[in-house]
Length: 339
Image (cartoon, rainbow, N blue to C red):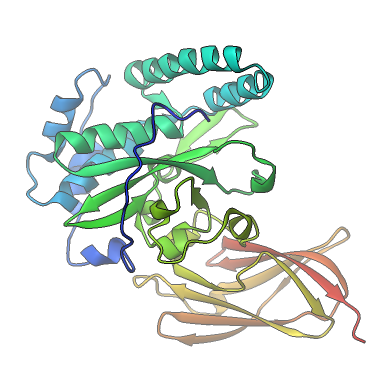
């Protein structure tokens, strides 16, 4: 989607393990209650909306949390608008004049829909979060880049397709994605369903990078950012991984080639608040002819989880890992005949 305005290029130093657990001693129940119950039909007076949301809170993180919760519970994702922009940009990609005319027109469409109807696309979510943060004196920036989902082949993208935010709280930078935190879009039905994902609020950079690759590498908040090619080859993580996991450890790539009867190991670090039993894990293999569900061998040590599975059948498989019946990651396996 089109980048609104100029990207502000900042030299942001990375923060080791900058994540929501930094604020584990904060109880956000009151903040969340206030934000979820505050109503505003339109967004003409952002200053007043922001003041009413944050006036009862003293800390930066509580005020920012109130804004994040309100946005993700009140702003709908307009997939039709996103699809229309994608079609227009593809149509005009070889005509710079018409493309620029469309981009200018589209900016106005986005702003009008956001203000009047509280519907937008990712750039609108990120813009609104930044603007409201500015009102309370919290430094936030819009980040443009590539968002990886089951429907998106990153290697085929010609332009950035997603936007999110970085925010500075108490002198430390954090990542968040208000668009994906707000809910789920169903493109085939033209419908959006609010379904808040708390895992996309102040997410650990080591997990966030699996689905978010910024144009400028400092926005990864990582000491050694991956390349775009490495990002494209990462395993595919799903929305529930952000609430269940703190980090994805192994394997590092989506596609694996192993020999028949080899035992393969998957490794994760659970989110600190997650309590889970061995039997809650399952591994599903999908081929062109069948789908089978297995119980992997599970080893747990605190937050560390290791799953082991012996692949006995040759062939090409999609492999999905589930926790508590929620899919968290997908891989592809080519199982070859033993020499």
